[in-house]
Length: 46
Picture 1: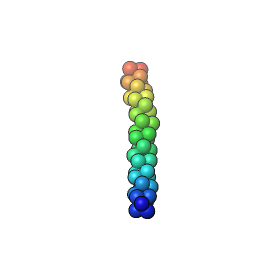
Picture 2: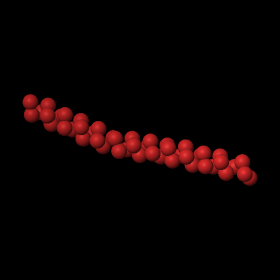
Picture 3: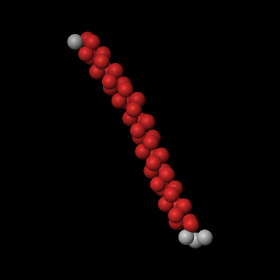
Picture 4: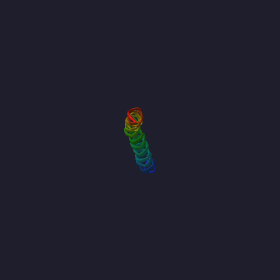
């Protein structure tokens, strides 16, 4: 059973890292959409 514990910890670290990357992608997506909208507005005003 002692062997399973480090593996579980490693899996938790990998899972946390994947969650963090997914969160970063979610955080970036709305910002990208807003930037695109701002560009559209600027192009309309020109």
